[in-house]
Amino acid sequence: MSAQPTHADVFSAANHLCASTIAEVEGELKIQHEADVEQALRCQAEERLKVEMEKIAAKHDALEEQDRLDIEAAEHELRIWKQALRDAQKGADTQEDDNDNDDNSSISSPDGQLVHHILICSVHSLLIMMPNLSGNYQGQDEASAG
Image 1: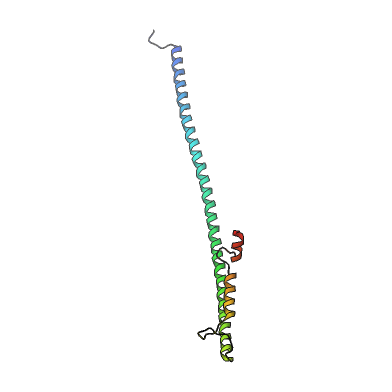
Image 2 (image 1 turned 90 degrees about the horizontal axis):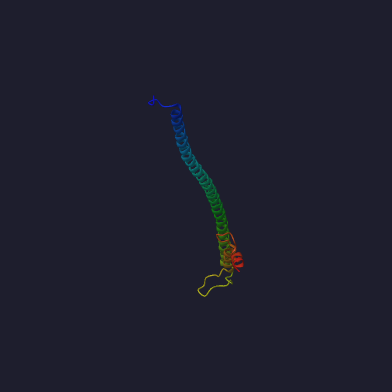
C-alpha cells in the first residue's frame, strides 16, 4: 500500500510544479519587460533623432533659399552698377567728343591726354557706396567695428 502516493504527496507535487511554473513565467515576463523598455527607449531616441534631422534639413533649406535670394540680389545690384558704369562711361565719351570739338582749352595731362575728373569722381563715388557682400556699406563696417 505504500507504493501508491498519498493525497498529500500529489498535492505537494502539484503545488511545487505550480510554484516553479509561476517563478519561470515571472522570470520570462521580467526579461520581456526589460526588452520592451529597451525597445521603447530606442524608439524614443530614433524619434528624437528624426525630429532633429528634420529641423536641420529645414534650417539647411532655409539657408539655401536665403543664399539664393542673396545671390539674386547681388546679381541685380551688380547689373545696376554695371549699367551705371556704362552710363558714366558713355557720358564721359560724349563729354570727350564735346571736348575734342572745343577749342582744346580743357585740362590735359603732361602726355597730352584729357583728364576726366568727373568720370574718376563718379566711379570713386560708386565704389565707396557699393555694398560689400555682407550687405553693409563700407562706412557701416567701420562704425560697427568700433
